[in-house]
Image (cartoon, protein in one colour):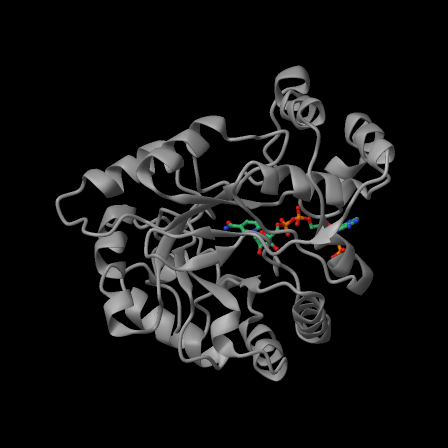
Length: 308
Ligand code: NDP
């Protein structure tokens, strides 16, 4: 079988009318020189979408790489995220992110988790943490919630620091609570969640389609160390197509019609991850059956959160 690999340039249209490239570079753990080089390499290779998050503490290098690339700002889709210690002040948090990125605006500003942490014990310098209470458990702010945060976030696009707003790690219940709340005026443009063949998120995908929300898949390779690339079925299908296992999983996600965010700081892998192809229907379905066959696997289950 000869496989035609192409640099992924596909886009989706957000509910704001703007386009979002379906392939984005993930940047968790892409720090310092490696993070800078990764973003530069990705932009050279044709990526036009960079995912970032304040809590990853690498906005300075990501922003610098975007600025140094020489690519016109309006040709790169940049995402930033509101960390859970700043839910009561999303406007201030966005300004701080823009300052660290060295950008006038981002294309998308996302609520990273639909829950807030207490900030009583934090100084203005150590905001990007998971604060703990006296029992050494995550210090969740139970007097606040994601709906209140969303109500505040809705003012941000008008203020100009972001073109669109979205959420991350929201379940269907969280999304319904936002959509059904009296103060809601804007439907989230995005829900960024963990998705891969072991967690295909079918119900969420249907719900998002129905509401005009674009789904984004994080940890498409299984996160740190890319464990899903070692799966026998993944290896067997990739071998038949003469492609990398990562190219197979990324292409599968793209073919499902959502944004896929593979992370790499390896310059060769950044390029190869951007080369995608179309799977035959039977292989597309075969990967989709993995979760049923082998059981679902969720890579990220932080102790402060229930995905329901
Ligand atoms: P990924 O599934 O993208 O996997 C990253 C791992 O795969 C790294 O160890 C990387 O190593 C390795 N890798 C990448 N490409 C290849 C390849 N071709 N061959 C072999 N190994 C490879 O995991 P992430 O958890 O990083 O998720 C992607 C992005 O999604 C994040 O970076 C972040 O931007 C976002 N995210 C968002 C979250 C949220 O709560 N909203 C949570 C988690 C992630 P190497 O760098 O050495 O190539």
